[in-house]
Amino acid sequence: MATPPARRRGMSMRLSALSCCALLAGCVQVNVHGDPDQYMTRTSTLRVASYNASLYSDEAGGLLRRLQSDDADARKVAAVLQRVRPDVVLVNEFDHDASGRAADAFQRGYLEVPQAGGGAALRYPYRYMAPVNTGVPSGLDLDRSGHVGAAAPVPGEDAAAARGRGNDAWGYGLHPGQYGMLLLSMHPIDAEAARTFQLLPWSALPGAARPVDPDTGAPWHDDATWARLRLSSKSHWDVPVRTPLGTVHMLASHPTPPVFDGPEDRNGARNHDEIRLWNEYIGVGDKPWLCDDAGRCGGLAEEARFVILGDLNNDPADGDGRHEAIVELLQHPRVLRMATPRSAGAAHAPGADRPGRRGSVAHATGDFGPRVGPLRLDYALPSTGFRMLESAVFWPAPGEDGADIVDGSDHRLVWVDLAN
Image (cartoon, rainbow, N blue to C red; front, side):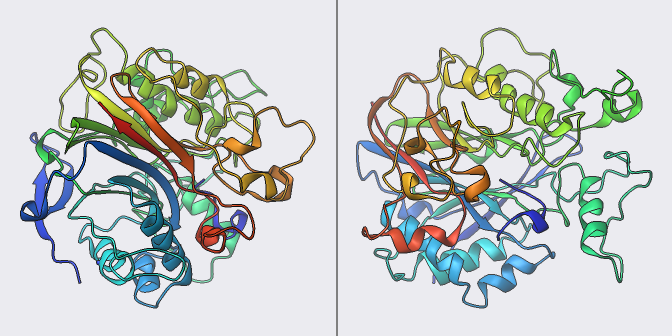
């Protein structure tokens, strides 16, 4: 859950670098790193995971400095990955930098070094990164505060002013790339076929939930702002990975939390529609409005198989948010019906026994304190066409093996094992 800082608690691998740019003018810079000589078909199963690792900083370049300073939380995150050893994992809240230096540092200094409580060194020969909307100045007064937030820190600004600055970015953030995404893979990534939807206008979505000012009944954003406002608070990615099971499309995103707004519920509306974009993308029919950042339009081919990954910031039954969005996605005809991943540890988290809970606490994927309690926000949803072998949330109960490494982030890793 990428939240304002005041409200959060808070690779010796050699990679051959490939840079690819989107095919049309106004292209999106994408970084894909791989080592084809290291790729081997190891197994007839595929383990895919989603993990909000909380590897971010409020300052540009801060994540790299964290990783260069022997960060204790990053070591725990790496230990979890070494224990679970997913073939493909989406890491949410990993600050984006075009050079990939932070991703290199995490791989070399953390994943490739056996960690306390973890397992053997872990090497991902392939990774995918692309720009995100968080922290990118819009030049617009998106929160209607009466002024446009500055694009950079202002000397002497207090915490409230800093948060206000983030509110006027295309996606909440204090610098471009904050709360970014990183896809790590044991198997080759088809970079040329990858699609990103960072720039897709919110208004392009049919039936968009345009926020309304409850005091006036008028739209919260004026027409000019609404026409420019981007749907994705970070980005939406379709990244094809060539796995032993065939090509699998990793559909990655991290919708905004449906909180930190006002009675107009603009973040709740945006979260709802960011999730709904995947319903549209995997749905049937022509989608001439659904154009990626390279200008290619339309949804995912009907025969394609996929896994939807990410911190979607929406629990099907509890917490804030418009739950119908995630419920509709879980019930989509192309999403595999499966037992919900679960853990033993969530039941011991603060707020697990909060009165009024409707969903099973065992399904939770994050520890958000006693007032909110554990929630299911992180997902790995495979498409039909796979066999589900096993799934879990990595969250051991207190005293169990691995329980001492889960608190590197307030989220927990969720994984699924798939076969043909």
